Amino acid sequence: MSFAQQELTELPKPVNKDKFAKSGLKVDKTYGTEGRLQESSERGGAICGIDEDFDSGFPGTWTNISINANENWTYTATGGNPDGHMDIAYDASLGLQNETLLTPAIDLTVIPSPTLKFDWFMSYYWGVDPNDNYDLTIRISSDGINWQQLWTEADYGAFTSYEWYTTNIDLSAYSSWNNARFMFNYNGSDGAQAKFDNISVCSAQNDLRVDQVFAGDVINDYQYSQIPVSQTSQIIGGVIYSNAGGTTLTNVSVESETVSFVNGLVSTGTITGPATLAPGESDTTWIATGYTPTMVDTIGQVCTLSADQTDATPLDNEGFQFVLMTDDTWAHDYELEDYYAFGYGPADGAAWSGGFEMGAAYFCQTDGSTIYAVDFALGSATTAQSITVKIYENSLTAAPISTVLYDIQPGDLSTTVVNFINVPLSSPVLMGAGNAYIATIAIESGDAADILGNNLDDGDGSQLLYSANNDLWYNWTGLTTSMRLRVSSVVGVTEDENLTDLNLYPNPVANELTVSLVANASEEVELTVLDVRGSLVMSEYLQPKQGQLLTQNISLKNFPSGMYAVRIQGQTINATRTIIVE
Figure 1 (cartoon, rainbow, N blue to C red):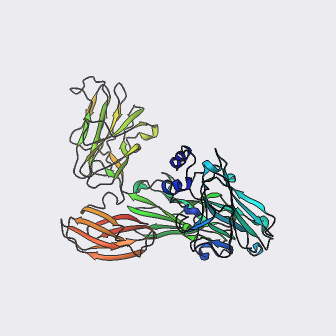
Figure 2: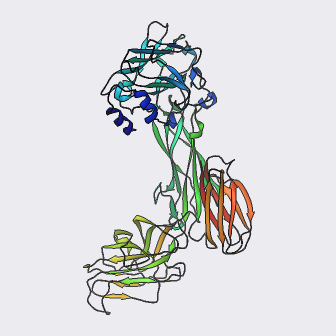
Figure 3: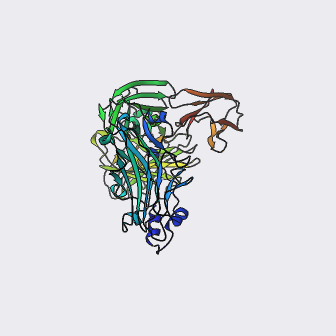
């Protein structure tokens, strides 16, 4: 909203700033974590002396004291946070405005850890800086005569003009008062518009909130969302959480559930968190799940928080994250067994100082997969200290679309075992169906070192055989290289072998999801939907015909918000997609 504030700084005076604000600076922003909770049950059993949202008008138990006859506190049914609120405009005649809203008296002695909470809205430009023409002030009194100031807008610091803000004030210092009243005052001349909404005096709300959930492993990265099965280790979960409420929470704990879409619930446990968590504090709990995936799968890590106190907003106590276990993809998969070698001289044995580059191609059959690393093996006679790994799309004549320099380590080299070197790409490559992606390794021009392949069988039916330097080059044509692309895909690499197409099309208007597929075989398949814990939500059988488009609509009306897996399974078909219902 900096645009709004800039507009105000350029306004000539006098002007009806409130009408300008209402028409040109309309703000629909509501602070989600600070948003008002509509029912006491959502407050975790909070005890309230005042709980006023003004949606039904100005309450009869309150008092509106007006000094200025032109502009004073007025009930407005729309434009609040979000609806009804109390609104005041500035007096264009520049008369003094000292306008007050008074609450009824309440007994703070029966409200544990009482907290005043309110939403407010005003102009920084006209109320704070560069003009201090009006103030919003809140005061408290035990007798209605002597008043103590609790808050004014200057206490907040910098804020954006004409946006809603939420403030909480600890009233523990007044908890012995049994006849407390509150004053909400507008005072000034030549000021600007102001509003109050959602005023409450309640026992402090407890809110233990999940901020982020991790699912990964120690070898890779806790935030790594795709991991090849060949590189897996124990799944490590984690959760960052914070106290978004107004009281200190005690004995925080984390309930962990690790779910495999293949094997169901694979790990559960409760982990002890901090003994105390003060308001505004955050902490992190790590979870050793004890589960190591062994196959292509989708793993969900669910973390649910609890503390001794009843939570006011329990819906934010749970979070989840997915990690996808994928196959490695050989660069000569899908019948494209071309290899590429260039940068060599005109004949064997000819001197050459142009470097050498060699690799293999992968033909992409389905959209959405991402190349994030390249694997290859080097023989122990390799003398190059560094090599360049490159990815090309369709042609070697264009510039590579991803390049990374790799420094060779002594432990990388072997001629006794197939010792694959894994080089993550600095710029992962999102692949499109119908394209060929060529992975190469290279020694650059002027490098006199050697790169030599490892001629042992790696078990995939081919051998890695190449050797090159800047003076001599050799390549064994007719043999495919065993270069691997580390490919991440929601469905794994081999999962869609018998599907030409599978797509999900959400329809928010109809509150449904359309599943479309083209199968390569006529066979009965089961369409299932699983929730984040792997529990079956719905299931039905379909009869796709070979080469024909089949569509099926799924109603989402009874689906709670969250992530779901849509799985298609038959005798030869096995595919999964994930969707998020909001």
